[in-house]
Image 1: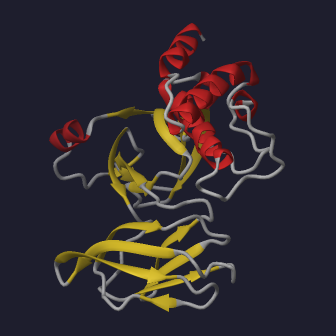
Image 2: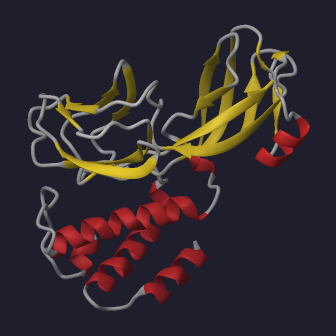
Length: 273
């Protein structure tokens, strides 16, 4: 619909020509979906995710699709786990050593990897697809105690290695999407597995007090992170009755890419919706 408004022919597959109207329109649609998704705490974004805790667990990485939690429940008493800000959490429990059933939680830190290296070492990177030979990977972190980085070219299913030894990894980013999943290993530690569509990853941590005294299940009700379509027939998970709002925003953003302005009209349509 957006292409027809721009008086451009329909397409049967996504464009890879970054200078074309079709490609710029694709980006406009993706941006419009993300903007509408993130605008409010819509009920259609609500999901729930289960975390398994075992004895001694006091913190976990939240799964990738968890946006903002709004209720955290436990399978054991007191069932409702109450939220405290990081500051309140630390003031209340400056030396959290107790074990039992979690009563409070806090959200903190956005980590760039799932696990940090056990010791400084070179990073091994390998893809699950032999087609991934043109992309680059940028790794940032600590090398010999200093902030540093290294860029590595992928070589498909053949592992490539950094020349620098990282004791901590702060972020990992791809130059573009890959066909396969990337696995990054330092020593014996798998520090990160990146999905094909992920160009960078941030993991938010959730911390509990007391730490789990036995195995239990934590249920997190949350707002899901936005879904960005990657094919012509993919879904954005926004109810179809709001398609005209997505279309109007995408049209406005596509016109901006062509040096024209329709943002005011888009805002009016969004406000009406």
